[in-house]
Image (tube, rainbow, N blue to C red; front, side, top):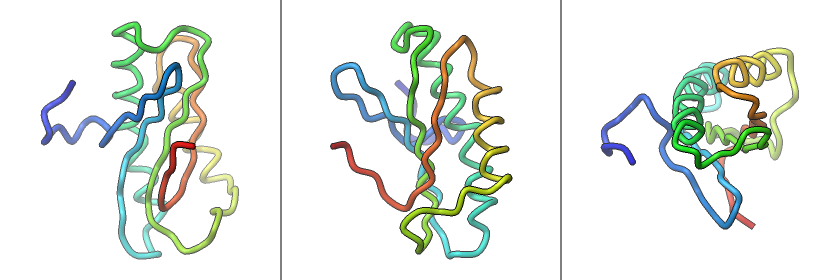
Length: 110
């Protein structure tokens, strides 16, 4: 859908049957993880909005956005800052689609 150098969209969308997962990779050292999460949000939102506009994502859907930012913990702690990023992402996404945000250092499609 996009040119490979389009830095305004997320890195990939994984599609299986009716399920779509949007992934943005921003790896680095442990420090600056919050900054990397912040950088992922507009790219994830832009791509999700494109899929909504194309009719690939139906209204009232719940989609998963994954920010692969690299960290050592199994799960990052739920903080007010992460909650703010989830809210920001949902405000940037049009329609009545709900976006769940997963912050991780890897992703699988089980």
